[in-house]
Length: 384
Image (cartoon, rainbow, N blue to C red):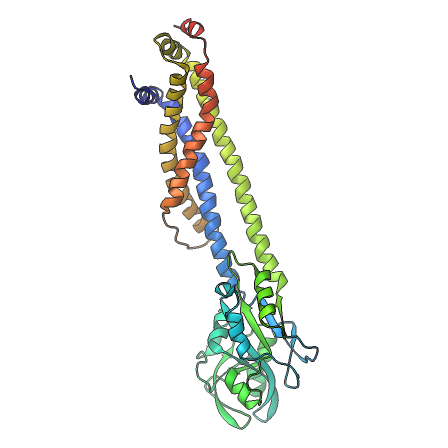
């Protein structure tokens, strides 16, 4: 009689024991799949959400002559003697870690005469700026053209400007495309214009006060990107906004450690459940083992019977564990995290799950199998 046939018949004769082992495998590998899938998905989601915070690297001229402030950073103003240049944008986009950079938003802070009064103006590249700050909401149409102007809420009130009004800047007529809703920052008092228009009106062609860089991702090292920018721009100073970077790193690290700890505990519980079940099965099958040994089965054959049973249960447990874990991850992310994220069926992860289930079942069954094989045939036959 073949070993696999004996193993299958033994599983059919003892469905409760087989079910306990199967549940142990499903519990262990299913939990690991749930935590791994949830962690990987949430890591990506966290990175995307942190992208919405805005820039995490600030590039400013390496100069002591700075007289305006933006985002808590002192930057060159209208009377500053040192500026960044337009070509610096190209240099940043060609650093070794450029693939990890999401947005490069150049800015020029200066003062211009608006409606007969001096006001602080910020020249920006609107597509990049709006991509950098997706939380911006505004009344009116999003600025697109060179003549379009976006006003902060306070600036609009002071100047008496509404969306759609014309606005005179340095003797030229511009269109007040929109007014920002209150941001609770210095942006409320600024007037945003196209960068090239501000450079021309302020007679500061090819001049930039600062460049904001968004480089959040799940794997990119912010410190290396800062170093690359500093190497590419020796006349500038790139600084990581430490609190934002630290906050993201701490959130992801805590979540990963928690998931690893839970996975270890559940894996250990599953292993113990299988071990206890198989040891109990060995005791119940003492008579059967004695008969096998009496009719000529070797110790190796007894071990093969138990391990074959473990392989069969491990295979089914791995498949069911992957399915259950993937479904549980979807439910966990949807209900607990409140995120609507699509989780697909990854056959590579499924294959790893099956291998992991096989290893779990074999390791947990190895000791009881050896113990069963070492039973004294004469002593075992006494139970008949």
